[in-house]
Amino acid sequence: MPTVTATAHSSTQTASPRSASADPIRVVVDQHGGLTTDLLAWQRHAACRGLEAEIFYPPESDGAGDDDGAFEAKAVCAACAVSGECLEYAIAVREKEGVWGGQTAAERVRIIRRRRRAAARARNAQAAATSN
Image (cartoon, rainbow, N blue to C red; front, side, top):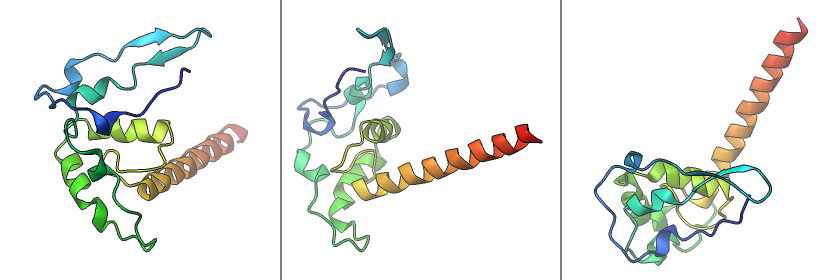
């Protein structure tokens, strides 16, 4: 899959009021014959467009779950029509910093871990069902 550059929080245009679902996701075949999608199409509709990137990269928390520095970014994301797509993009590319889709880096790590555990449980349940 081609390398994707994260630029969601550095754009200088204002978000369109249109629904993100109005634009189809573009699927293309890459140079290796694999299917890929336009992972950044949602950015045209992001509420963060035109805002200062620093809002989405607050100082590190104290490690005790204190996300007070992320409050402003999370407020923007809460009102964003494409926060789900933004979050999924950040998870897909393992974005290590900043607030994406209303979630801090630590929160995204927890989401990834929960998803991995759920997938493992599903695989185990399926294996148990087929072995009976």
